[in-house]
Structure formats: structure tokens, C-alpha cells
Image (cartoon, rainbow, N blue to C red; front, side, top):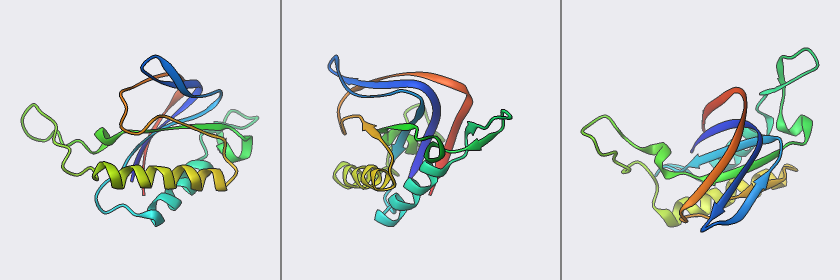
Length: 145
């Protein structure tokens, strides 16, 4: 499981012009699922995301997590995180898990985050989504399980 994580002041996701998820300060998390990923990996990813220390403390150092500050998360499925662009001009998505499997594991991740106490908004799996976000500082990270 791979996540592209952005610290944001706000983020939202819409499908066909209708907002389906929105957060204030927190993390916008794009999640990709690969063939070998499983429920244990989804649980580990939830722990890593919830406790990732990317928010500034009183000295301006990134020592605090979403858990420490009760920040929200917006989780959006993103199979293109497993795109292989090493050959030609068209990305290959062969490493990405099949949609049915990926959807279950993204749902498992979201439920694990909620089980940890996180407030989580989501996109809609498989839909053409429009994501809007305001990035907060230089934080865009890739997190792998």
C-alpha cells in the first residue's frame, strides 16, 4: 500500500459537481493498493498515517501528528500511485490491485483510521473525482507499508 500524503489547511473531493468529502486542517491522503497488499498492511498504514509527525509544535518543529492535534484526514483512492512509467509514453498500471480488492483494502484503511479515533472523509471509489486542496507548507510525502 502506498500513500501520497499532503499536509493541508483544507481539502475536498467532488464527484459530478457534488461534494462527497471535505476536511479542514489535516492530511489529504491519496492511497494506492498493489497486488500483495492485505488487511495487515492497511492496519499498519492507518497507524503510520495517524501518528506521522508532520505538524509543527510550539517551536515550529514537525513533532506532532494528526492524532496529537485531532486533525482530520481526507482519504482518496488513487491507483495511479502504482503507475510504471519506465518504458514508452503510456503508464502501465499492472502493479495496481484489481478494483474490487483495492476498494476493500481502502475501506479497511478508513475503518482502521476511524478505529484509532480519526475523523475521516473519503472520496468515492472508482468515480471520476475532482480534488481541491490547499497545501500547508512543504509537506508532500510518500508513505509505503
